[in-house]
Image 1 (spheres, rainbow, N blue to C red):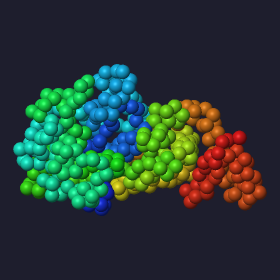
Image 2 (cartoon, one colour):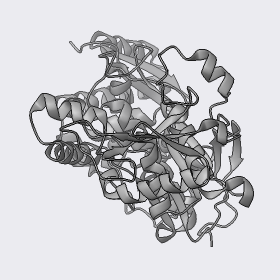
Image 3 (cartoon, rainbow, N blue to C red):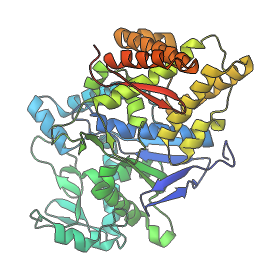
Image 4 (cartoon, helix red, strand yellow):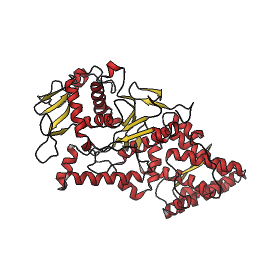
Length: 474
């Protein structure tokens, strides 16, 4: 039973390309699966975006249905060609490399303030379920062995391409690489392949080998969540081929068409992270590791930056984005520090304007705007009871976004020079506002000029004056 009857979450479903009200198959057991990292290196900030986005979705679902009724699984891919290559280059055992980078992944995302998922299955712990899934696909006529491989026959699944909007004819016409001779159709994808000497492998009915990448998520979902789940999430780059292939495998194995079911009922994808407008990728060499960014910025600043744009929109990650996010947090924490003596009222997070914004397809920019409005109202409130209520709403709403979880005094002490600057800027903004209210525009203009000379840009908005650095501070 919903913990908040009458409140409805709207999600954009990639399958169909439209906004839909979210209605779980069982409100007592809401299931969410998100593709996790391939652990061959430290993750970059682009990998961090789905971690933060789906952490917010997890929080919203817990608020709607109760924490005990939501199961969030995020996998670890610990068998992959990239892992084999990295281990060989480093001269270390594959297991040691994957364990090291799994630990590094956990360390980095902990700094982003994320809740741990309910489950974190690893691919290498699910080889037998993968073998059993392949056997089922062969038995049902959807897969075939060939030259030590097993491949999925895409022509056997009539709805192949429904998620990405591609047709088999388009895929065949667009093929630009030589198609392996053992494939019946260029779009057929690998379920099992032989393991080369020195590579990890397992015995199977088709010889010593290892699973194809697309297979693992389907096997783990079936093992832990069931044949049909509520929400499947990940980055937009996974729509094709990975998620398209997952649907084909899952539905072909379970007979979705025959039983009127789905592999996943809602498909949710976050947009790319770009650097200067170009998609971030390791092959382009324009990626930034989370670990490196965390040496220069608090994790909460990175989290705010990753939530500053709607999750489906591309996010241009830059120093300006980070500085704007730091400034926004400085302003919010300053209000909390100034009202440290106010005891927040107990507030149901589902009754906050932040929650209302997030129900609209995880509108995190709207949620952040709601935080600023609550903070501005708290700063202006004269009545003690009103301050108590507003602080309670602010803290409850911030919890949904995973923000403002630190002690305000510690926040301003944590990054000395920058926070001292922030405090000075906020004081000058307050003096400028007082001068404007007194119609002393000469003084107000002089304060703006003073701030401009220090590299600070002001923006006057209906919610108050915001500021950001325009360049290096003199």
